[in-house]
Amino acid sequence: MAPDDSFAQPAFAKVFLAFAFGLALGAAFVLPVVRDDLAPLLSGGSGAVRGVLLVGLVSIVIVSMGLFGLYRISH
Amino acid sequence: MAIQPSIAGSDALPAGALQVSPALVVLVLLTAIVVAVIYAYQPPLPQTMAVAFVPWIVTGAILSVLAARGQYPPYLEPAFTEPGAYLTAIFVPALVWAAMLNLSVSKRRLPAYHHYIGTMGVGAMAILWAALILQIGSARLTMMLVLVVVPVMALLATGLIALSIGFWSPDFVDYAAITGGFAVFGALVNGIATATNFAMVGEAAHTAFSAAVQDVVLTVAPGGVAGVDATHIWVWLFLVANVAIGIHVATRLAPYAESSPRAVNAMLGFVGAVGFGLGFDRLLVLVVG
Image (cartoon, rainbow over all chains, first blue to last red):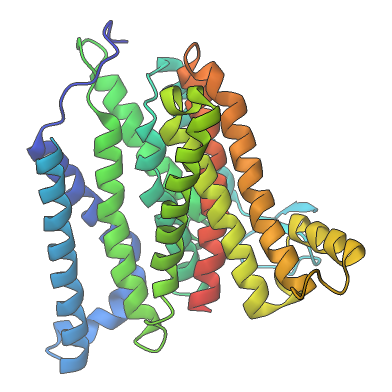
C-alpha cells in the first residue's frame, strides 16, 4: 500500500470519464428493460416516445452539467 | 426462514422460503472475494466513502423494481432481483475500488477512489431513473416526487440533528460528522418510509419494530393523549425512536473514530446504508406499485 495515505487530487477528465463509464454501465443494466420502448424510436416511430426520450436525455445532460459545474467550483 | 436451493423460477417453494439460485450463490461469492481483496489492502476509508455509495444503493433499488416488472431474461434475473440487485450494485463499485487499489500499489499517493466511485454511481443512477420513468409512464410521475422529497427532508432534518448533537458530543463533529450523519439520515429515511407505507398500505406495512412501538402506545394510551389520537402518537414515537437509535450508534462510535477511523467509518457507513437502502426500497415499491 502507498506509504502516504493522503489522496491525490482527482483529475477532472478522469472524474468525467468515471461518469461516462457509469452512464454506459447503467445503459447496459437497463437495455433488456427499455429495448421494447426504444424499438419504436429506432424505427422512426411515434412522436410521444421520442419526446419522452429527448426530455430524458436533455434532463440528464442538464443535471450532469450542473453537477460537474458544482464539482469544478468546489475543487 | 427456510433457504432452499433451486433453479430460478422453475419450481414452487413453500411460503416463506428464500429462493437461492446458483447464479445468486456465484454473485455472493464474487462479491465476498472482491470485498476480501479490498480488506487485504487495508485502504484508508474517508468519511465521504459512505456518500459515494448512496447512488449505488439507489441503483440497486431501481434495478430490483425494474426486474420485478419481469423485463429481464430468466438467466439475468438473479442478478437484478432482490437481493441480487443490491449485490450487483455493491459488486461493481467494489470491483472498481479493488482495481484502483491494485493499480496504485506502487504509487506514493492513492487515487481519490471515493470521488470516482460516487461519480460513476451518479451516472448509472441517472440512466436507471430514466429507464424507470419510461417504464412507469406519466401516470405516477407526480408520486415519484416522494422519492426526492423524503430524502431531501430527511437530509435537512439530519443537518439540524447533527448540529444539535455537536453541543453535547464534540467527537461526533470532529471525527464522524459525515458517517454519523449518514447513520442518522438512514434511520430517518427508514422511519419515514415505514410510516408512509403504513399510512398507504395499512397493517401489512408493519415491521417488527413499528409493530412493537404501536403495541406499546396502544397499551399505554389506547385513546390517545391530549386530543392526539394513538396512531399519530405511535408514528411520531416510532420516528423519534428510529432517530434515537441512529444518534445513539453514531455518538457511541464517534469517540473511537480518532484511533480507528476505518472501522468506525465502515460501521457507521454500513448502518446508514442499511437504513437508507431499506427505506428507499420501501418508498420505491410504494410509488411504483
